[in-house]
Image 1 (cartoon, rainbow, N blue to C red):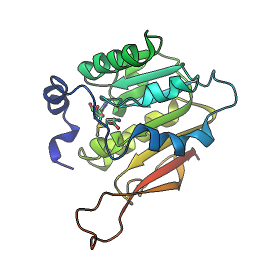
Image 2 (image 1 turned 90 degrees about the vertical axis):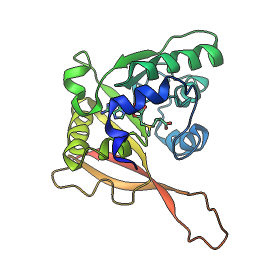
Image 3 (image 1 turned 60 degrees about the vertical axis):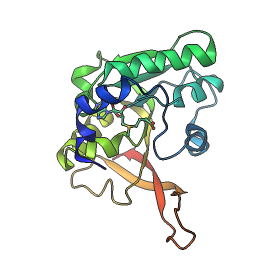
Image 4 (image 1 turned 30 degrees about the vertical axis):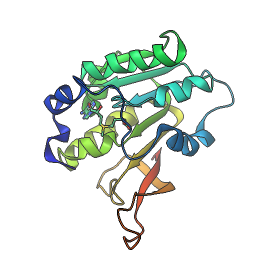
Length: 198
Ligand SMILES: C[S@@+](CC[C@H](N)C(=O)[O-])C[C@H]1O[C@@H](n2cnc3c(N)ncnc32)[C@H](O)[C@@H]1O
């Protein structure tokens, strides 16, 4: 990823014109990996980190999960998120909060607790700020997970969570093939990680 991807100014410029974009894979594909972790009751509290211009929140609402807090540090992303929800669902019932995912506890109104935290390539953008930024994100997620809660993270990196002091046990729950430009290109995969608090 380009070094600028951790900077809010990059996203501000981008979201001034971008209204819809899915990083790494479609939200429908990501949802197939998330589905086994959705609870039987739809009152599950879900935190969607770095929502951008993805329609992942709409996929959740289609399945009945509306207690979703979409966060991004770029306010334009939240405007786009509201517009997408309104367009697909006819109204806006989800929460949208400006927050830096590397300082979640400070930026989210306390006490915010979640049963499921989702990020689709947001950790990749954060990683451009270095391992300390990813660790700060991980510690913040850990602090706002309710008992039994988990974090599902989609990343292009096979080593994204190889960090000392990570407060999670990590396993890979899905591999998504990356697009090939030539048939002879090697098989490569994005990783879908499940992180359970230690
Ligand atoms: C790679 S895009 C992913 C967007 C969306 N999840 C998707 O799959 O299309 C990264 C997103 O994370 C947001 N972001 C990057 N760093 C952030 C931070 N420290 N705090 C909050 N949001 C951040 C950006 O504004 C952008 O919306």
